Length: 620
Image (cartoon, rainbow, N blue to C red):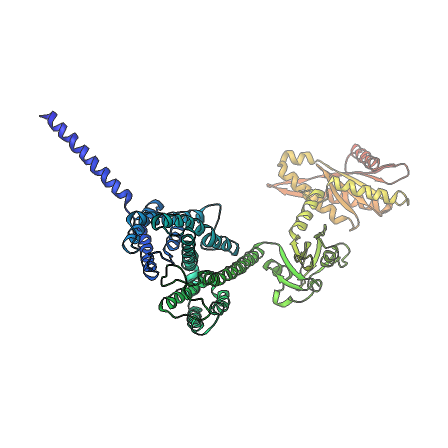
């Protein structure tokens, strides 16, 4: 019983899988709404063409359906080409048999050629070999597109079509291939371009509120001119071509394609209705037909020229937009960067300032536009305060970028100075002529202040603010070099604190630091502006007296000993005091170097300490 049930379940599952497979197969060949729409548009266009060009032999002279279908395949993303082409094959076969009156096999063969052309056109136009950037076709790409649509692809299809017509109805191969080529090329060139060139941007540009009425008026004018040309002009196509070329400059390639399609369809309609001009040849094409004798090549040439002119206009518009975008990006970049950017013309007159430049020089572009840069930006040498060389003049003279290596002083209208580094670069036209100069000013004030701070830290003691040993010995060297040749006296006082170790031991290093700061302040208050006080390290200080005689030296030494001995420091509820021992050495013929000079003062200081401290000794 269970085994039977299991067999039934297995059978049911197999039937279900078969049903799903069949449903999947049907879905695999089912067309989506967009794919059905392409097939429907192809069938409708082919039906109209067959009806308009009906002749006794059933051979149409105008067949735009393949061009429309190929354009839709190219432009519509996501279409499954295999299914669409199969739908086109079926639709074309039915139309050739039911409307064209061809035998079923002949209809299938003719439809197969049309389907092959549609697929080949879509494949070629979408291939990397052609590289057509739909819908933004450039002039060069437009030439390639019209070569393919008007010559290469219709020519290949015409060869196949001629063979089929020769085989099916016994038509002359050359005549059949020629008629096929004319029909395919005319249809592709007259009806397909608007599909290839359509974009929402192009449509919005044509239908915007600002241009809608004018564009409608131009379209109406072209249609009216078409009627008048057909009725009254001996050379109607030439008469039509000139205004279409002019209009193409305004409406671009897509607008020109729409207007040319409207004009072309109107001419076809007039021809079918018998409205013709003496300037066009009477229909003499073999096989007859409503469009027989219509000069398709002349008409296509007249329609293509405005579209190509539209490509040129589009290229120009794109170039202008790209230039505007690039200018905006450049302006945004210049506004965003921190350096001051100033542009001038070839004679040095200011044409542009970015925000940083306005802030740096303290003036806006409206205030300085047209003025010479040297009049607005005054740079001087910080050491000599002389006006520096004009970088604009130097750049113009050399014809190459120039950069000033040293910082200059910029004097602003409000009187506040700042330091800048400036560069100048020439701006040349494609033919090499100088158009102007770009000057970049970089605010270097912070760098100058930082260098000053670093220089001060390198030369001064962090605790007392006095110059350090390195700077003191450097100054001694300068003094030694100046005075040893003119036998002018310079004197060094080395001061070593007494009882300083006791302060550190009892009050700690913080108390010792405070003692050192107070001693430094005291020494600085006792000397002249021309004298130099230094902390040499630890509890050792030095004084350089560039211009002093012995009475002045003895007087200063006595003041130093007394002031330091009277100095008391309160720290953590304790009182601390120190003394000093001083060694003095003046330049003398026996001192042959700065090292010997310091050593002489150091020996004198040691002798003062041995004498009982609180003493001063002068080296003999």
